[in-house]
Amino acid sequence: LAVGGGLLWTVIATIAGSLFGTFFMAFHSAQGPQLGLPQLVQSRAQFGYREAAITIFIAALVNYVAYNTSDALLSGSATQLLFTIPPRVGYTIAAVVAALLALFGYHWIHRVNRWLALPLVAIMAALSVAALTNHALPAAVWNLGEFKPAAFMTVFVIMAGFQLGWAPYVSDYSRYLPSSVGVRSSFRWTFLSSAISGIWVFVLGAVMSAAAPKADPVTAFLMAANQFGPVFGWVAIAALLVGLLSVMAINQYGGSLTMISILDSFRPVKPTLRVRAITIGIMFVMVFAISQLVGIDGFNTFYGNVLVFLAYVFTPWTAINLIDYFFVRRGRYVVAEIFNPRGIYGRWGWRGTSAYLIGLLVMVPFMVTTPFTGFIAAALGGVDYSLFIGLPVSAVLYLFFCRSLDLTTEFRMSDAEGKMPVAHAMSQSEISTDD
Image 1 (cartoon, one colour):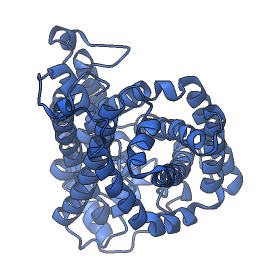
Image 2: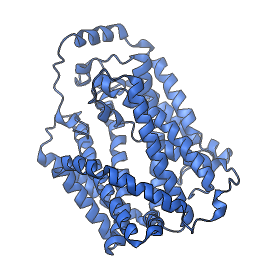
Image 3: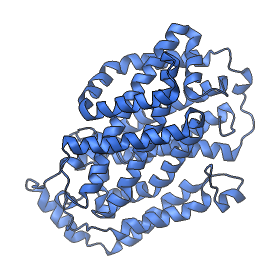
Image 4: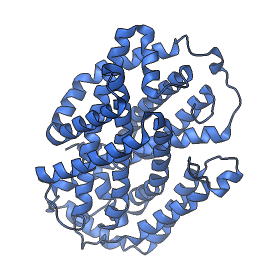
């Protein structure tokens, strides 16, 4: 609603954007059981050993920092409502707790999440009922109203960006499944769970925002929960805070490993406790500084721009990665060579990088963000069609550039590797956030 569309059109755009982004993200998940590799590491086959580190790995790090900043802002607001702590102090406390959990208590996060899964689903279900029966929700919001293309596509891109933001990590979770798990099964379960959860949360947020348009997200959350009494309101905010701290800890951990992986691509780095403490500390400083600058009042604008940015950054990459896996190499990679900086995939992958940069460049005239609107988007009334440009352009260019690949040799090496144990040393810095 913050972008100017009515509630029903916002809901429709949310569903459409989520389904669109999840469709591509779920195909990345399908790669996990077949290769057993972290998604970012697999990108070396398209971008090269070092090129992947200075393009996709850095984009992933920005992703972690941006999401953690958003979570820190919400955590600060939650601590203020629960304990009357000033929001900026709450940001700091949340970031410190998340950093300590990431450093010392990562495995406890998984245990706690398993314990809290069903209670949190129950709270979300109760919140949904409370939000939909909120007397502060104007009856007029259920009228379809005028269709505003610019607002509709902004929500569409935001939701697509939210789902595409998971694409660089989604196979990190599916890669522990046996290789007998097929593409259809991996795709189906990832698509259904991610699409349903994303649509549920964002639609619920839109309904809460419609009932309290001038409130920050956490206050609107509390106002909806209070429909079932102040005790439930307090419990709902406490559950939100626990969930945010858990996610922040995972993001701190993932951001730390991403930084180590970037460094390891140029010089071997052993991820000791000291190294992890330093990188987690860097994450903490970045999140703290940005959250202090943005503040909870700027959350909606910041978060919206973050998701739009992620949609732009990962659209060309998702096209290249999926085209390479399903159409160029058809899932046949020499895994040992992915970890060899002097291997067949090279240090610098001009094909993937060229297709990525050109795809991103042709998207610019169609982009719509708070600080910048492309000239074609402006001529179209502020409607953002950039995703529909970047995807096909990057895909077609990459296919064209790959015509010169010696796939016969690659496939022969892949077949030979499949007949014997793979003796490659996978450094701890390249283990995904789920290890």
